[in-house]
Image 1 (cartoon, rainbow, N blue to C red):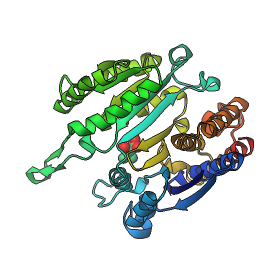
Image 2: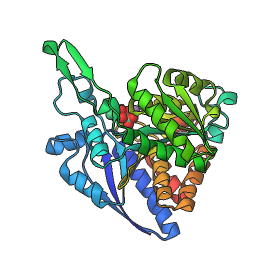
Image 3: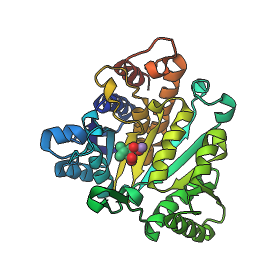
Length: 351
Ligand code: IPM
Ligand code: MN
């Protein structure tokens, strides 16, 4: 297969981890006879510095023309502590999601056999966890009208959803559940929020189209608790944008390190693959960042194109690296810590 991939490395550790994912993907492509071309483009603080905006049109054009986008991370501390900053790297991410129509954010949480004792949660709680969040990504409070009134003394962010937005996300949830254990959990706050009542009503009306899927409806506060108490009771979870943002960070703790979890953002035309961790600015250029989440995001990318064996080859080599202790400092646990590049080289060589 010939694939052209837009590469948006972004800020902080983004470029370093992306470089490893490219290396590993190229090794997979060589092994399975695919032809990958990588088209770099600017985003985030790096793009603000270069051209004054975080998601320039040239970058958008490169993304649209590509078969998929591989994304690193964006964010820079110089913007975090400046509430008055006019442009922010994060705006680039939101514009990109919206303009590329990436309405479904797929965030799996699974455990790695060799890391079960590294999680802050007890082994017996997390063993067997294999769940997927489908987070709605282009609506809700992130994109509703926001502003100030009363001379700046009052602020508001509106949360808005249409039935169609809920439906298209829920379709993905039902379809994914059909390929897994046929269990779907709709996470909302329908006891308080009108948007949540629309979510619940919409998903309930869709149940008849998927008679084999068992749907549960749970409030977000209860899910936040159950997620760390009995994570392996969940399979596919669908939820709105902000709830999904918060719960998926919480869920990442289960696997033992934020540096391990990949994600995909998909729409009808485009697809983007990225680690769930951020730009980790303190670690920039120190060769200590864990590249595995980005490498596993590349695995999701191959799988998205139907290349299951290729994806599995990446998952297998990551597992062998974890088994043999070829890991960065976040996972070294007193043992030897390898550099980002060393880990990337090892994965590429052994894939
Ligand atoms: C994420 C991030 C982003 C979000 C930020 C950086 C805007 O936290 O991808 O989860 O809130 O969606
Ligand atoms: Mn987040």
